[in-house]
Image (cartoon, rainbow, N blue to C red; front, side, top):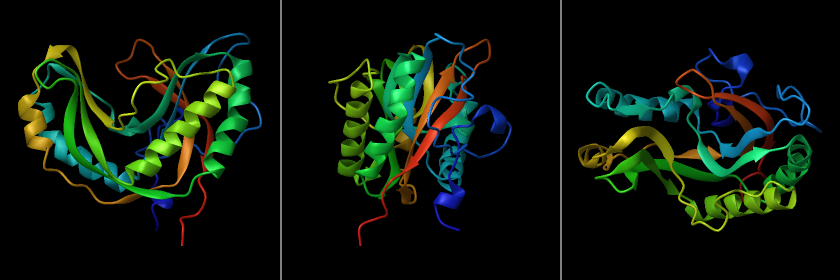
Length: 229
């Protein structure tokens, strides 16, 4: 099987208890989002790495979790690479966004990435976020993120951090209080994961609640163009 067959999931509600399974939908308007009329939805656009790639990264991070219970480790089932966080979006703008994201995806070819190294925001000694970095065609990734952000702006859902430098990563853990993660970053820094194909983008609704992890529902999914010959 190829990367697409193994694509991991930003798990939608119907697949919440599966190991993988991003629900791939290309709706003409927002359906099944669970939003009441007039309600704002917390949205982001992302790519989802293959399950086998995430399994390897999860196995690498696993031994560190027990030793750093001061960190809030993210849920492996919902790991993703964010292209644009859109914040609170109303239904009308979200519906317009579907067409814009489809157009953005059509303008870009499938490209390859790999997880490599680690880091922290804002610094390793007073970190709020521990992350794994990305290698591969970072130029193609940045251009795709630019197209997504531009499409979102035209749809009336501009990213709140528009204009800020794009720093692609996968969030491994968040810190309840600023924490020193220097040793963790050093331990993870030499990691080089397998190459994988970034082949589609996903519009995802994130709902925060009483549980430790947010609930994700995939509202739309659009393939990129086939790889260049």
